[in-house]
Length: 95
Image (cartoon, rainbow, N blue to C red; front, side):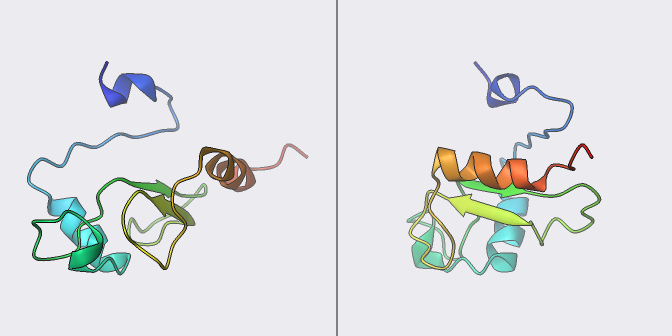
């Protein structure tokens, strides 16, 4: 099953970056060093990262929260429960 089908939601977007354009750009933006991502990369790639944005976010380079499955030390490693809490906190309240 394709990832875009597993996470089918009108509020979620899935991207495929076969040429690593976004991975390179976001690697720089998130401060990922070469040794922290894909082993054969000469630059840090945003690979296996999870980015969360609140409503109205304008810049791809500035997620409200992000997690990873890399060797990055300056951001939290992916944890499903923590991810869920962070995403829920970004949702508008129903006051």
